Length: 71
Image (tube, rainbow, N blue to C red; front, side):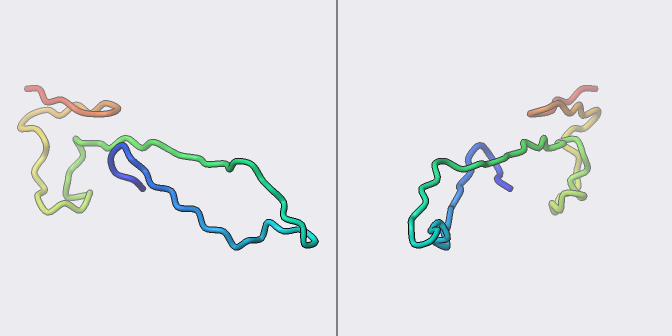
């Protein structure tokens, strides 16, 4: 899982792209990704953080990509 807006992919080969001694050239690759929204309003004690205090003093409203507080 990658935190933030950057991701590093490292590819390793076992040189299994040979068939009967002939090198087979494959173009491209397939990659799948999934964006997971962080629920900033959830109890931080569940996420493993040391400080279990909520993000807001009153009401916390979570939305995709962020949150806001209200009273």
